[in-house]
Amino acid sequence: MDNDKFEQIIARAVGNIREPYKSRLQNVAFILEDNPSAEQRQKLALRHDQTLFGLYEGVPLPQRGGATKLLPDKITIFKNPIIAVSHTEAEVEQQVGQTIWHEVAHYFGLDHTRIHELENKKNSEA
Image 1 (cartoon, helix red, strand yellow):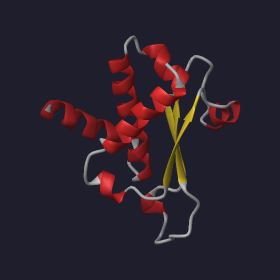
Image 2 (cartoon, one colour):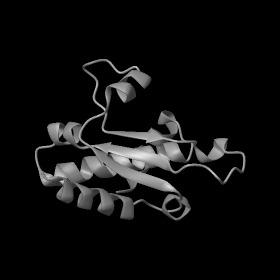
Image 3 (cartoon, helix red, strand yellow):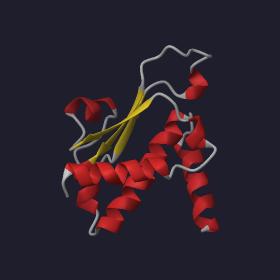
Image 4 (spheres, one colour):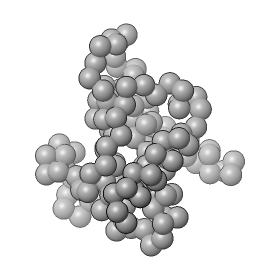
């Protein structure tokens, strides 16, 4: 899959972020990279056998203390790991959507426990 197609999938996933999160998402850049860098993997203390689909880098909203003049937060989506676990374009779209939601949740200060609770709630409503 070429980068243009993958960027279209990212754009759709960003457009599908559910409320109330979507309207409160500000000053966030969504970046496409082939793979996480060595520095990113080291920062997260990832083992060689661990996969990273996306990464939020910035100051989560609850920790900003009202500060407004910050550099844009960055959410990076890693193409090759997503392609590696996906067999179809539909699976790519699903994984990208899930990854975008997960990283946006970090922007809002949610930890993994709360993210999974919300994902389980969403899945039970579907």
